[in-house]
Image (cartoon, rainbow, N blue to C red; front, side):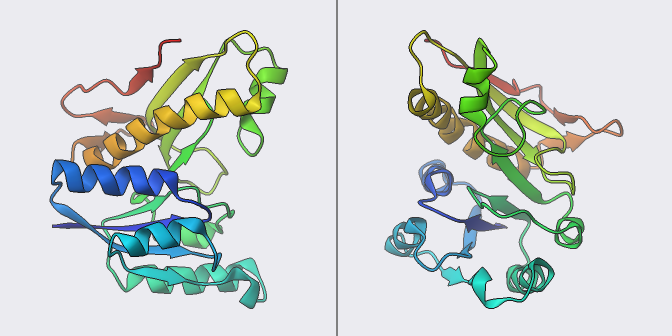
Length: 212
């Protein structure tokens, strides 16, 4: 049975989507821990209600980013995870942390990377006049919001869209694509090719399109 550790900062809606899919589809996997750097992250309450083990490592108690990341890595290593899932984990991770979990550290970003790395992605897409927006699941590398792409989803930018409306449609796609990507990884269906591209070994579509 494969083991997952999930990292969250807020309500953890993607964590909930993954946990729900895992249970409903009976994946041969378990969530060993849900870890947050924020003691009052809303997702911790949901995880506890589901009987999941939760851990808080408050980043404010550490002198610097390196010290926090070292403590976080040590806690994660206790569970010997096959996959570490960043589910709305709003911290920039140090290169040492990323290298330690390289190849088994997955993130979701609310844009069609490499466009709009960083914050405020939906408003930036609107300001740029984009006709489509979306989200990307990728393996984490030391370069922020980059790394081999596992799956992407696109949604149309509609007349009258504001940041909240666009974000809501993208988030609905995230809740479909992230569980799919995690399931693929756990089933050993993903192959990282030398040029840095991720291929699904059985040819499953690695994109989603949400109709208006």
